Length: 186
Image (cartoon, rainbow, N blue to C red):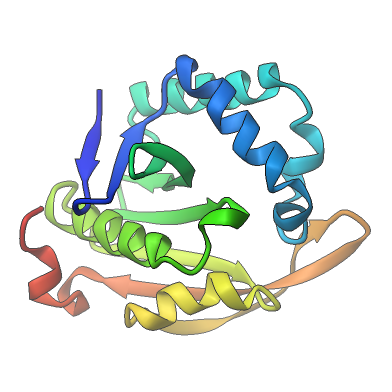
C-alpha cells in the first residue's frame, strides 16, 4: 500500500474500501461547499458511490495509470489528492485535489500539492506536472500560484458544471524548474 508522510500532521495514503464511510461522511458534510466547483458531488449520495470511486482508483493504480490518495490530517481524512492521469510516454501528469470545508485555511493542501509534486519529479521521474482549476475557484488557483507553477493559459468553457460552462486556468511545472529544496526527503 502507498503512503507518503508529508510532515508531522499530513500524510497521503492510497485509499482502501474501508475508508469509504469516513470519506463519504466528509463529502456529505461539505456537500454544498464542494458542489460549487465539483460536479461529481451530486452523484455521490451513498457510501456505495464512494466505494465505487475508491475501487476505480485502486484499479487505475494497479494499471499504473493514476494515483489517488486520501489526505490524512492528524490521522483523519481531510480530502483527496492525486495524479488523475499519468502519461508515461510524455513523462507528465495532472494533479487534482479537494479538501473538506472544515479543513480549509490550515495549509494542508499547499503541503500536500508540494509533496505530491516533489514525489512525481523525484520518484516517478516525471518531467511535467499540470494543475487545472476553474477560473473563479480562487482557493484552488492559489495553490499552484503559491508553489511557483507557471500560469500557462485559460481554456475557455473547458467544463460543464451543472447548468453552465466554466473556464479552466492551466498551471504547469517542469522538473527543471522545481526548487531543489522541495525535492529533499522524497
